[in-house]
Image (cartoon, helix red, strand yellow):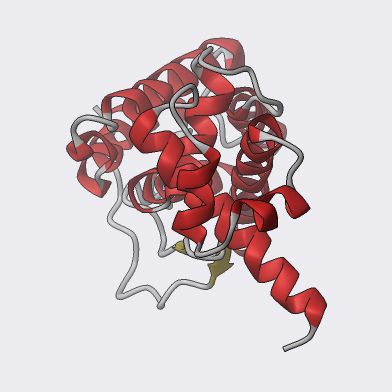
Length: 230
């Protein structure tokens, strides 16, 4: 292993350790000695990579942002429609929040006011929702009379609520909860023709949360179950 590879691994280990410590103790009580020991290095090694605790926190948020951006881009690349990409991305974000301490700590640091750390992950999610709904409207899969502004507000508010509630009860971030949400919303959001092609449970997007690397799904077992219009 080269010196550069070791440095990269150490930096990633410090980011993940910092996320775990911040999630457990909060930013104010997160001690550098706990972060360094969790990564298996000395505090001197930590200071080689990060000037102070604020710099570590910023790196956690940046890493969470990178993972979410890569996941969203990969999903849109492999998904036929913008509305399905929106559903799939929400499932992947929930998966990351369930399984990945960097994503959880990133949201906590950037969104809760405990420490304002750029970028704002909820604002990034809001922009992604806006972009996908605009794309759906442009190609005619958004139902007539649907206000994009109202749809964005409803989706962002609901998913932000799932993230906060999921910190104390993982059921809020479960596939079942997300699927139920989309079963309720998609009949109002999509045209009748588009609705028959949408799968509220997602279409197999998976994440390797340890490295924030998104891989292709394992393959669909069958055609998506259509959502019944109420």
